[in-house]
Image (cartoon, rainbow, N blue to C red; front, side, top):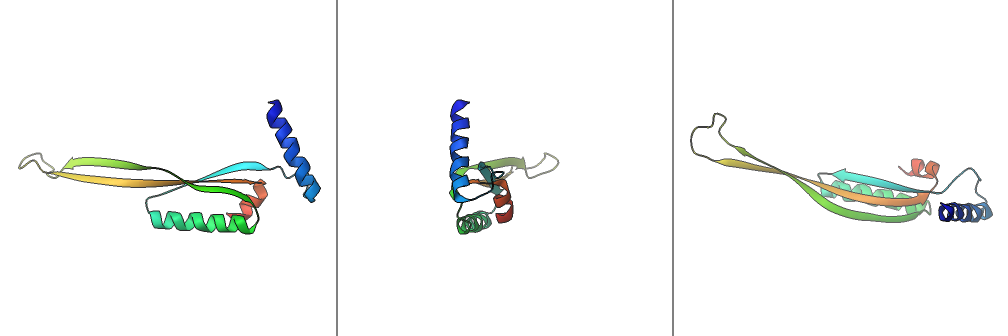
Length: 111
C-alpha cells in the first residue's frame, strides 16, 4: 500500500511541475479489443495508437493475445438417417490489448 501511494505522489508531483491540473490523476488504462476480422482489428489498433502518440501519451501495445478457436461439429442430416457425414464449423476470435498511462479525460478524447 505504501509503495503505490508513494508512486502516485511522485507521478502527481511531476505532473504538477509540468503545469497540469492537480485534479487529473494518471491512470493505467487497459483497452481490450476483440474481433473476428484481423484486418479491421489491426486497423483500429493502429488508429488508436496513432491518436495516443499524437497526444503524447505513454502507450504499450498492441499486445496480441492467443486466438480463441470455437469449434462446432454437427451431423449434416437433420433426421439421423443416411450416411454419417459431418460438418465442421469454426470461429476465430482475435484479441489485442493496449495499455495507456494518462488521465481518463484524455483517453475519452482519443477514443
